[in-house]
Length: 282
Image (cartoon, rainbow, N blue to C red):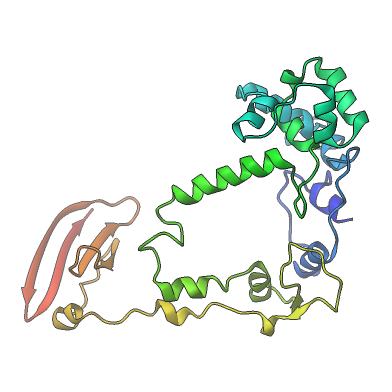
C-alpha cells in the first residue's frame, strides 16, 4: 500500500536507498491511487497514530498527540479563539459543535474529554470540522492556511508575480509550469493526469507528456547592452564572480567573493574602451 510506503516503520525518518525499478513505480502509484476518504473515525492513518517511529526513540509514537502537545508548548490560543479570528461562529453549546463537526458521537466525545468547549485544541478542532465542498479541510483550516499563504506571498519581494521580478513574457511562460510537466521532464513516466493532485482513471483521463505545455526559456534570453558593446565584458576574477545589473539605470557589474574569501581592495580603469575591474581577494 502507498500508505505503508510513505509512513511505514521501515522508511519514516530514515534515508531511503534508491528503490528497485527507479522512481517511476512510486510516481505512478502516487498519481494513480486515490487518497483515503476522510471520515470522523479515520482522520489520520494508523501508521502515524499507532506505529510512528522516530529516530533514537525505542517505542512507537502518536503524531496526533505530538501535534496537540506542540500547540500547547507554543501557547497557541484555543479552537474558539481561532474561529473568532477567522470570523467564524463561536461555539457556545454542544449543539453548535455537532453542527460544525457533522458527527454527533464525535462532538459528544470531544465535549466529554475537554469538559469545556473553550478548552478544545485548535489542531483537533480544525481537524474534525466538516470539509468544505471540493476541499480537504474545514472552514477554520481553510481560513488559517489561506491567510498564512497570502502573507507569505505578499511579504516576499521575490515572489514570481511581484513587480520587477520577471517580465510579462517570462510570467506568461511560468504559468505553463505544472507538477505534471515536472514529472514528465524528470522521469520516464510518459502519461500523466493534467492535474496530478486529483485522482483520474487511467487511461481515459491521462495525457501524453508531449501534450502538456512547457516553459520556453527563450523568454530569459538577454540582449547584449549597448554599454557592454562599447566597454566589453568585465574581467573574470579568481575566487569570485559577478553579475550584470541595470537596476540603477546604468549597467553595473556586481562582484561577490566565494565562501572563505573577502574583498580587500578594488579599482576601475577604462582602457581602450574596455572596462577592467581589478579585485584583490584573499
